[in-house]
Amino acid sequence: MAKRVIVSGVMGAIVLIIWAFVANALLGLRSGIDMRSVSNERQVYDVLRDNIVAPGGYIVNPPPSQSGDLVPGQPVFSIRYSGVGHEAAGRILIMQIVIALIASLMAAGMLSVTSDRVMASYLRRVLFFAAIGLLFAFFSDLALFGIGGYPLRSALLLAGNDLISWTLVGLVVARWVRPRPHHGVAV
Image 1 (cartoon, rainbow, N blue to C red):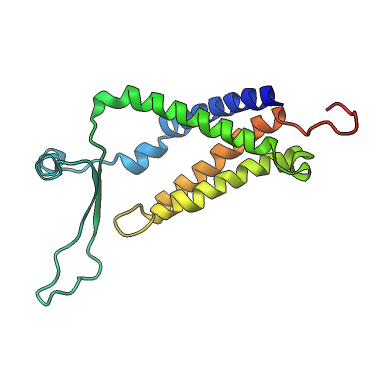
Image 2 (cartoon, rainbow, N blue to C red):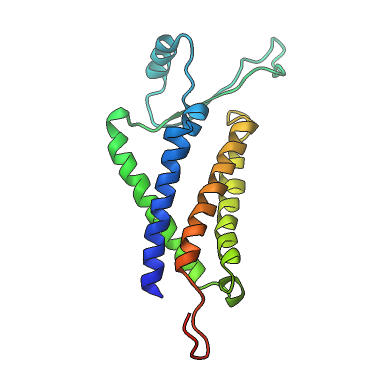
């Protein structure tokens, strides 16, 4: 069973990587959400570079009214700075591949020790992975919506992407990780 878990985990990671390429490089999911440009990018860049010198997340609130109250409808901006530039793209890509491999191996291992009822059905094994995608969607992606965060549409797109990603992984892993043999019957 351990060999099947490892093989399925590696295959699941390959599926995650391929889907990430399709969703992001071909369909433009992340670039459409995270890489919009501003008309005066050079000036905005210069202001940010001069004022944000340490990695972290920053919120830029609108100024209060004359009476000190918050003015309704004014935008709140969120800025993320990781501390690295374009030169780190290769290292970050390798790190993302390693994370995909570890996550897929862990999920395949969790599936292999789940209940006999889940293991008995290919559909239930796939749904096990869809449930993982739902957990990511609810507790990671949808939590990004809000003040200084993503618009609801973007958070929903990210959540949908996680659900699709983990369901695709489940389609592959569920073929490899099968029920344990019982009563001398080989599966």
